[in-house]
Image (tube, rainbow, N blue to C red; front, side, top):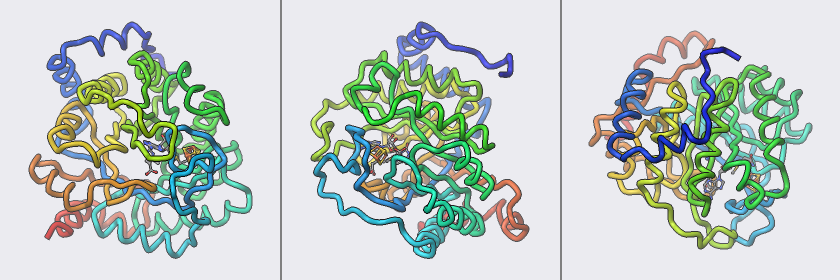
Amino acid sequence: MTSAQPRYSRSDIQRLFDTPFNNLLFQAQSVHRRHFNPNEVQVSTLLSIKTGACPEDCKYCPQSARYDTGLEKEALMEVQAILEQAARAKETGASRFCMGAAWRNPKERDMPKLIAMIEGVRELGLETCMTLGMLSPEQAEKLGQAGLDYYNHNLDTSPEFYGDIITTRTYQDRLNTLQNVRDAGMKVCSGGIVGMGEEQSDRIGLLQQLANMEQPPESVPINMLVKVAGTPMAEVEDLDPFEFVRTIAVARILMPASHVRLSAGRETMSDELQALCFFAGANSIFYGEKLLTTANPVADADQRLFARLGIVPEQRVVENPPEEVALQAASETNELFYNAMA
Ligand code: SAM
Ligand code: DTB
Ligand code: SF4
Protein backbone atom coordinates (compact mmCIF):
# COMPACT_ATOMS: atom_id res chain seq x y z
CA MET A 1 0.00 0.00 0.00
CA THR A 2 1.28 3.47 -0.81
CA SER A 3 1.41 5.48 2.40
CA ALA A 4 -0.18 8.48 0.64
CA GLN A 5 -3.51 6.65 0.26
CA PRO A 6 -5.84 8.03 2.96
CA ARG A 7 -8.25 5.80 4.85
CA TYR A 8 -11.65 7.28 5.43
CA SER A 9 -13.79 6.67 8.50
CA ARG A 10 -17.56 6.62 8.28
CA SER A 11 -17.70 9.94 10.11
CA ASP A 12 -15.32 11.55 7.57
CA ILE A 13 -17.72 10.51 4.83
CA GLN A 14 -20.82 11.43 6.85
CA ARG A 15 -19.37 14.92 7.23
CA LEU A 16 -19.17 15.25 3.45
CA PHE A 17 -22.77 14.13 3.00
CA ASP A 18 -23.81 16.68 5.66
CA THR A 19 -22.05 19.57 3.88
CA PRO A 20 -24.43 22.18 2.42
CA PHE A 21 -25.14 21.25 -1.20
CA ASN A 22 -23.42 24.23 -2.81
CA ASN A 23 -20.30 23.81 -0.68
CA LEU A 24 -20.15 20.10 -1.44
CA LEU A 25 -20.48 20.67 -5.17
CA PHE A 26 -17.88 23.44 -5.11
CA GLN A 27 -15.46 21.14 -3.28
CA ALA A 28 -16.14 18.24 -5.65
CA GLN A 29 -15.70 20.43 -8.73
CA SER A 30 -12.45 21.88 -7.32
CA VAL A 31 -11.06 18.38 -6.72
CA HIS A 32 -12.26 17.30 -10.17
CA ARG A 33 -10.37 20.11 -11.90
CA ARG A 34 -7.12 19.13 -10.25
CA HIS A 35 -7.27 15.70 -11.90
CA PHE A 36 -9.36 16.00 -15.05
CA ASN A 37 -10.43 18.36 -17.78
CA PRO A 38 -13.91 19.31 -16.45
CA ASN A 39 -15.31 19.49 -19.98
CA GLU A 40 -14.42 15.95 -21.01
CA VAL A 41 -16.52 12.87 -20.36
CA GLN A 42 -15.42 9.32 -21.13
CA VAL A 43 -17.88 7.43 -23.33
CA SER A 44 -18.44 3.66 -23.16
CA THR A 45 -20.94 1.46 -24.98
CA LEU A 46 -22.40 -1.65 -23.38
CA LEU A 47 -23.45 -4.89 -25.02
CA SER A 48 -25.15 -7.85 -23.38
CA ILE A 49 -23.25 -10.80 -24.85
CA LYS A 50 -25.27 -13.38 -22.92
CA THR A 51 -28.70 -12.42 -21.70
CA GLY A 52 -31.01 -13.65 -18.94
CA ALA A 53 -31.44 -16.98 -17.13
CA CYS A 54 -28.85 -16.01 -14.52
CA PRO A 55 -28.72 -18.34 -11.50
CA GLU A 56 -28.00 -15.48 -9.05
CA ASP A 57 -30.75 -13.76 -7.06
CA CYS A 58 -29.77 -10.06 -7.19
CA LYS A 59 -33.08 -8.39 -6.32
CA TYR A 60 -32.59 -5.46 -8.68
CA CYS A 61 -31.77 -7.49 -11.76
CA PRO A 62 -34.08 -8.22 -14.70
CA GLN A 63 -31.74 -11.05 -15.78
CA SER A 64 -32.11 -13.28 -12.72
CA ALA A 65 -33.90 -16.54 -13.58
CA ARG A 66 -35.82 -16.18 -10.29
CA TYR A 67 -37.97 -13.27 -11.43
CA ASP A 68 -40.45 -13.13 -14.26
CA THR A 69 -39.51 -9.96 -16.11
CA GLY A 70 -40.55 -11.15 -19.57
CA LEU A 71 -36.95 -10.94 -20.76
CA GLU A 72 -36.02 -13.12 -23.76
CA LYS A 73 -32.98 -15.16 -22.78
CA GLU A 74 -30.13 -15.50 -25.27
CA ALA A 75 -27.08 -17.78 -25.45
CA LEU A 76 -23.53 -16.42 -25.64
CA MET A 77 -23.26 -14.38 -28.84
CA GLU A 78 -20.86 -15.30 -31.63
CA VAL A 79 -17.62 -13.36 -31.83
CA GLN A 80 -18.36 -11.96 -35.29
CA ALA A 81 -21.72 -10.52 -34.23
CA ILE A 82 -20.07 -8.88 -31.22
CA LEU A 83 -17.36 -7.32 -33.39
CA GLU A 84 -20.03 -5.87 -35.69
CA GLN A 85 -21.68 -4.20 -32.68
CA ALA A 86 -18.30 -2.97 -31.46
CA ALA A 87 -17.54 -1.43 -34.86
CA ARG A 88 -20.92 0.31 -34.76
CA ALA A 89 -20.20 1.64 -31.25
CA LYS A 90 -16.90 3.01 -32.50
CA GLU A 91 -18.60 4.68 -35.47
CA THR A 92 -21.01 6.37 -33.07
CA GLY A 93 -18.08 7.72 -31.05
CA ALA A 94 -17.58 5.35 -28.11
CA SER A 95 -14.00 4.83 -26.91
CA ARG A 96 -14.62 1.77 -24.73
CA PHE A 97 -16.69 -1.33 -25.40
CA CYS A 98 -18.07 -3.17 -22.36
CA MET A 99 -19.35 -6.72 -22.74
CA GLY A 100 -21.65 -8.08 -20.06
CA ALA A 101 -22.82 -11.63 -19.42
CA ALA A 102 -25.60 -12.81 -17.10
CA TRP A 103 -23.40 -15.38 -15.42
CA ARG A 104 -22.43 -16.27 -11.87
CA ASN A 105 -18.98 -16.84 -13.38
CA PRO A 106 -17.55 -17.79 -16.78
CA LYS A 107 -17.11 -21.50 -17.54
CA GLU A 108 -13.80 -22.85 -18.80
CA ARG A 109 -15.39 -23.74 -22.15
CA ASP A 110 -16.27 -20.07 -22.72
CA MET A 111 -12.73 -18.78 -22.25
CA PRO A 112 -11.45 -19.20 -25.84
CA LYS A 113 -14.44 -17.29 -27.20
CA LEU A 114 -14.05 -14.53 -24.59
CA ILE A 115 -10.39 -14.20 -25.50
CA ALA A 116 -11.25 -13.92 -29.21
CA MET A 117 -13.74 -11.14 -28.38
CA ILE A 118 -11.14 -9.18 -26.44
CA GLU A 119 -8.57 -9.50 -29.21
CA GLY A 120 -11.08 -8.52 -31.89
CA VAL A 121 -12.41 -5.45 -30.04
CA ARG A 122 -8.88 -4.28 -29.30
CA GLU A 123 -7.98 -4.58 -32.96
CA LEU A 124 -10.77 -2.12 -33.71
CA GLY A 125 -8.90 0.38 -31.52
CA LEU A 126 -11.40 0.37 -28.69
CA GLU A 127 -10.65 -0.08 -25.00
CA THR A 128 -12.07 -3.35 -23.73
CA CYS A 129 -14.13 -4.06 -20.64
CA MET A 130 -15.99 -7.16 -19.50
CA THR A 131 -18.37 -8.01 -16.68
CA LEU A 132 -18.89 -11.75 -16.41
CA GLY A 133 -19.41 -12.38 -12.69
CA MET A 134 -16.85 -13.92 -10.36
CA LEU A 135 -13.36 -14.70 -11.69
CA SER A 136 -10.78 -17.15 -10.39
CA PRO A 137 -7.16 -15.97 -10.32
CA GLU A 138 -6.47 -18.14 -13.39
CA GLN A 139 -9.39 -16.73 -15.37
CA ALA A 140 -8.41 -13.17 -14.47
CA GLU A 141 -4.87 -13.93 -15.61
CA LYS A 142 -6.07 -15.30 -18.97
CA LEU A 143 -8.36 -12.35 -19.67
CA GLY A 144 -5.62 -9.90 -18.72
CA GLN A 145 -3.14 -11.68 -20.97
CA ALA A 146 -5.61 -11.43 -23.85
CA GLY A 147 -5.56 -7.64 -23.45
CA LEU A 148 -8.66 -6.93 -21.39
CA ASP A 149 -8.24 -3.35 -20.14
CA TYR A 150 -10.99 -3.20 -17.49
CA TYR A 151 -13.04 -5.68 -15.52
CA ASN A 152 -16.34 -4.50 -14.04
CA HIS A 153 -17.53 -6.12 -10.84
CA ASN A 154 -19.64 -4.00 -8.52
CA LEU A 155 -19.81 -4.13 -4.75
CA ASP A 156 -23.36 -2.86 -5.29
CA THR A 157 -23.98 -1.54 -1.74
CA SER A 158 -22.65 -1.51 1.84
CA PRO A 159 -21.57 -4.77 3.52
CA GLU A 160 -24.49 -4.28 5.97
CA PHE A 161 -27.25 -3.96 3.34
CA TYR A 162 -25.76 -6.47 0.92
CA GLY A 163 -27.49 -9.53 2.42
CA ASP A 164 -30.90 -7.90 1.81
CA ILE A 165 -30.13 -7.70 -1.92
CA ILE A 166 -28.15 -10.82 -2.83
CA THR A 167 -27.91 -14.15 -1.05
CA THR A 168 -26.19 -16.34 -3.66
CA ARG A 169 -22.72 -14.80 -3.36
CA THR A 170 -21.06 -12.95 -0.52
CA TYR A 171 -19.47 -9.53 -0.23
CA GLN A 172 -16.16 -11.30 0.34
CA ASP A 173 -16.63 -13.22 -2.96
CA ARG A 174 -16.85 -9.86 -4.69
CA LEU A 175 -13.77 -8.49 -2.94
CA ASN A 176 -11.87 -11.66 -3.91
CA THR A 177 -12.76 -11.22 -7.58
CA LEU A 178 -11.63 -7.59 -7.47
CA GLN A 179 -8.33 -8.70 -5.93
CA ASN A 180 -7.89 -11.33 -8.66
CA VAL A 181 -8.49 -8.65 -11.30
CA ARG A 182 -5.90 -6.35 -9.68
CA ASP A 183 -3.37 -9.16 -9.33
CA ALA A 184 -3.76 -9.92 -13.03
CA GLY A 185 -2.83 -6.31 -13.84
CA MET A 186 -6.19 -5.19 -15.23
CA LYS A 187 -7.90 -1.93 -14.33
CA VAL A 188 -10.76 -2.23 -11.90
CA CYS A 189 -14.24 -0.90 -12.56
CA SER A 190 -16.35 -1.19 -9.41
CA GLY A 191 -19.18 0.80 -7.93
CA GLY A 192 -22.74 0.23 -6.90
CA ILE A 193 -26.43 0.96 -7.15
CA VAL A 194 -28.34 3.57 -5.20
CA GLY A 195 -32.09 4.03 -4.92
CA MET A 196 -32.66 0.44 -3.76
CA GLY A 197 -34.32 1.58 -0.53
CA GLU A 198 -30.98 1.69 1.28
CA GLU A 199 -30.15 4.22 4.02
CA GLN A 200 -27.64 7.01 3.56
CA SER A 201 -25.37 4.99 5.86
CA ASP A 202 -25.32 2.29 3.16
CA ARG A 203 -24.25 4.76 0.49
CA ILE A 204 -21.53 5.84 2.94
CA GLY A 205 -20.55 2.21 3.56
CA LEU A 206 -20.29 1.50 -0.17
CA LEU A 207 -18.10 4.54 -0.86
CA GLN A 208 -15.97 3.76 2.19
CA GLN A 209 -15.27 0.25 0.87
CA LEU A 210 -14.31 1.55 -2.56
CA ALA A 211 -12.23 4.53 -1.43
CA ASN A 212 -10.31 2.56 1.21
CA MET A 213 -9.11 -0.12 -1.21
CA GLU A 214 -5.35 -0.41 -1.41
CA GLN A 215 -5.75 1.00 -4.88
CA PRO A 216 -9.24 2.45 -5.48
CA PRO A 217 -10.98 1.39 -8.71
CA GLU A 218 -9.95 3.37 -11.79
CA SER A 219 -13.60 3.47 -12.78
CA VAL A 220 -16.49 3.85 -10.31
CA PRO A 221 -19.97 3.36 -11.78
CA ILE A 222 -22.75 4.91 -9.71
CA ASN A 223 -25.97 3.32 -10.96
CA MET A 224 -29.40 4.69 -10.12
CA LEU A 225 -31.65 1.67 -9.79
CA VAL A 226 -33.61 0.98 -12.97
CA LYS A 227 -36.88 -0.38 -11.59
CA VAL A 228 -37.90 -3.36 -13.67
CA ALA A 229 -41.39 -4.87 -13.37
CA GLY A 230 -41.21 -8.41 -12.04
CA THR A 231 -38.12 -7.83 -9.88
CA PRO A 232 -38.55 -7.49 -6.10
CA MET A 233 -37.40 -3.87 -6.43
CA ALA A 234 -39.98 -2.76 -8.99
CA GLU A 235 -41.83 -0.56 -6.51
CA VAL A 236 -39.14 0.87 -4.24
CA GLU A 237 -39.41 4.55 -3.43
CA ASP A 238 -37.47 7.03 -5.58
CA LEU A 239 -34.24 8.41 -4.18
CA ASP A 240 -34.13 12.21 -3.83
CA PRO A 241 -32.21 13.33 -6.95
CA PHE A 242 -30.12 15.75 -4.85
CA GLU A 243 -29.02 12.83 -2.71
CA PHE A 244 -27.93 11.10 -5.93
CA VAL A 245 -25.88 14.17 -6.89
CA ARG A 246 -24.38 14.24 -3.38
CA THR A 247 -23.35 10.57 -3.76
CA ILE A 248 -21.52 11.42 -6.99
CA ALA A 249 -19.86 14.45 -5.39
CA VAL A 250 -18.68 12.42 -2.39
CA ALA A 251 -17.36 9.67 -4.70
CA ARG A 252 -15.44 12.32 -6.64
CA ILE A 253 -13.89 13.79 -3.46
CA LEU A 254 -12.94 10.39 -2.00
CA MET A 255 -11.55 9.00 -5.27
CA PRO A 256 -10.14 12.10 -6.97
CA ALA A 257 -8.19 10.30 -9.70
CA SER A 258 -10.91 7.77 -10.66
CA HIS A 259 -13.44 8.12 -13.41
CA VAL A 260 -16.86 8.33 -11.75
CA ARG A 261 -19.50 7.00 -14.10
CA LEU A 262 -23.02 8.37 -14.23
CA SER A 263 -24.16 4.89 -15.04
CA ALA A 264 -27.64 3.25 -15.19
CA GLY A 265 -30.72 5.40 -14.67
CA ARG A 266 -30.03 8.29 -17.05
CA GLU A 267 -33.09 7.42 -19.14
CA THR A 268 -35.35 8.88 -16.44
CA MET A 269 -33.07 11.82 -15.53
CA SER A 270 -33.56 15.31 -16.89
CA ASP A 271 -30.73 17.02 -18.76
CA GLU A 272 -30.52 19.43 -15.83
CA LEU A 273 -29.98 16.62 -13.33
CA GLN A 274 -27.31 15.03 -15.53
CA ALA A 275 -25.59 18.43 -15.87
CA LEU A 276 -25.51 18.69 -12.06
CA CYS A 277 -23.95 15.20 -11.91
CA PHE A 278 -21.23 16.29 -14.35
CA PHE A 279 -20.62 19.38 -12.21
CA ALA A 280 -20.38 17.13 -9.15
CA GLY A 281 -17.56 15.25 -10.87
CA ALA A 282 -19.15 12.48 -12.95
CA ASN A 283 -16.95 12.08 -16.02
CA SER A 284 -18.04 8.90 -17.75
CA ILE A 285 -21.31 7.62 -19.22
CA PHE A 286 -22.75 4.64 -21.03
CA TYR A 287 -23.61 5.76 -24.51
CA GLY A 288 -26.05 4.03 -26.86
CA GLU A 289 -29.74 3.30 -26.67
CA LYS A 290 -29.44 0.21 -24.51
CA LEU A 291 -27.60 -0.59 -21.29
CA LEU A 292 -27.65 -4.40 -21.00
CA THR A 293 -31.37 -5.07 -21.23
CA THR A 294 -32.97 -1.73 -20.31
CA ALA A 295 -33.24 1.59 -22.14
CA ASN A 296 -30.60 4.34 -22.12
CA PRO A 297 -30.86 7.79 -23.78
CA VAL A 298 -30.40 7.53 -27.56
CA ALA A 299 -27.03 8.68 -28.92
CA ASP A 300 -28.61 11.78 -30.48
CA ALA A 301 -29.92 12.95 -27.12
CA ASP A 302 -26.47 12.59 -25.54
CA GLN A 303 -24.77 14.38 -28.42
CA ARG A 304 -27.22 17.26 -28.01
CA LEU A 305 -26.68 17.33 -24.26
CA PHE A 306 -22.89 17.35 -24.66
CA ALA A 307 -23.10 20.12 -27.26
CA ARG A 308 -25.35 22.24 -25.01
CA LEU A 309 -22.88 21.84 -22.13
CA GLY A 310 -19.72 22.24 -24.22
CA ILE A 311 -18.63 18.75 -23.19
CA VAL A 312 -16.46 16.65 -25.49
CA PRO A 313 -15.82 12.90 -25.30
CA GLU A 314 -12.54 12.03 -23.64
CA GLN A 315 -9.91 10.63 -25.99
CA ARG A 316 -9.38 6.95 -25.50
CA VAL A 317 -6.18 5.66 -24.01
CA VAL A 318 -5.18 2.30 -25.49
CA GLU A 319 -1.97 0.92 -24.04
CA ASN A 320 0.31 -0.67 -26.65
CA PRO A 321 -2.19 -0.21 -29.49
CA PRO A 322 -1.47 -1.52 -32.99
CA GLU A 323 0.57 1.19 -34.77
CA GLU A 324 -2.09 2.35 -37.20
CA VAL A 325 -4.60 2.73 -34.38
CA ALA A 326 -2.14 4.78 -32.34
CA LEU A 327 -1.66 7.16 -35.28
CA GLN A 328 -5.36 7.87 -35.54
CA ALA A 329 -6.10 7.97 -31.83
CA ALA A 330 -5.52 11.64 -31.08
CA SER A 331 -8.30 13.22 -33.10
CA GLU A 332 -10.62 10.48 -34.17
CA THR A 333 -12.98 10.07 -31.23
CA ASN A 334 -14.21 13.67 -31.29
CA GLU A 335 -14.58 13.58 -35.03
CA LEU A 336 -16.63 10.40 -34.94
CA PHE A 337 -18.80 11.67 -32.13
CA TYR A 338 -19.68 14.92 -33.85
CA ASN A 339 -19.93 13.39 -37.32
CA ALA A 340 -22.52 11.03 -35.92
CA MET A 341 -24.51 14.14 -34.94
CA ALA A 342 -24.73 15.42 -38.50
N1 SAM B 1 -23.58 -11.03 -14.01
C1 SAM B 1 -22.45 -10.22 -13.77
C2 SAM B 1 -22.39 -9.71 -12.36
O1 SAM B 1 -23.40 -9.46 -11.75
O2 SAM B 1 -21.28 -9.54 -11.86
C3 SAM B 1 -22.31 -9.06 -14.75
C4 SAM B 1 -23.54 -8.33 -15.24
S1 SAM B 1 -24.49 -7.46 -14.00
C5 SAM B 1 -25.95 -7.05 -14.88
C6 SAM B 1 -23.59 -5.95 -13.81
C7 SAM B 1 -24.11 -4.90 -12.85
O3 SAM B 1 -25.25 -4.26 -13.39
C8 SAM B 1 -24.59 -5.37 -11.49
O4 SAM B 1 -23.56 -5.60 -10.59
C9 SAM B 1 -25.42 -4.18 -11.04
O5 SAM B 1 -24.62 -3.27 -10.31
C10 SAM B 1 -25.89 -3.54 -12.36
N2 SAM B 1 -27.35 -3.64 -12.52
C11 SAM B 1 -28.06 -4.74 -12.81
N3 SAM B 1 -29.37 -4.48 -12.85
C12 SAM B 1 -29.51 -3.17 -12.56
C13 SAM B 1 -30.64 -2.31 -12.43
N4 SAM B 1 -31.88 -2.74 -12.58
N5 SAM B 1 -30.41 -1.01 -12.15
C14 SAM B 1 -29.15 -0.55 -11.98
N6 SAM B 1 -28.05 -1.32 -12.09
C15 SAM B 1 -28.23 -2.61 -12.36
C1 DTB C 1 -22.58 -1.08 -14.29
O1 DTB C 1 -22.19 -0.65 -13.20
N1 DTB C 1 -23.75 -0.79 -14.82
C2 DTB C 1 -23.92 -1.48 -16.08
C3 DTB C 1 -22.56 -2.18 -16.26
N2 DTB C 1 -21.89 -1.91 -15.05
C4 DTB C 1 -22.48 -3.57 -16.66
C5 DTB C 1 -25.11 -2.34 -16.13
C6 DTB C 1 -26.40 -1.62 -15.87
C7 DTB C 1 -27.49 -2.58 -16.09
C8 DTB C 1 -28.84 -1.94 -15.97
C9 DTB C 1 -29.93 -2.94 -16.15
C10 DTB C 1 -29.97 -3.58 -17.52
O2 DTB C 1 -29.91 -2.86 -18.55
O3 DTB C 1 -30.14 -4.80 -17.58
FE1 SF4 D 1 -26.95 -12.33 -12.61
FE2 SF4 D 1 -25.35 -10.22 -12.68
FE3 SF4 D 1 -28.02 -9.93 -12.75
FE4 SF4 D 1 -26.89 -10.72 -10.49
S1 SF4 D 1 -26.59 -8.75 -11.54
S2 SF4 D 1 -28.71 -11.62 -11.45
S3 SF4 D 1 -25.22 -11.94 -11.28
S4 SF4 D 1 -26.76 -10.87 -14.30
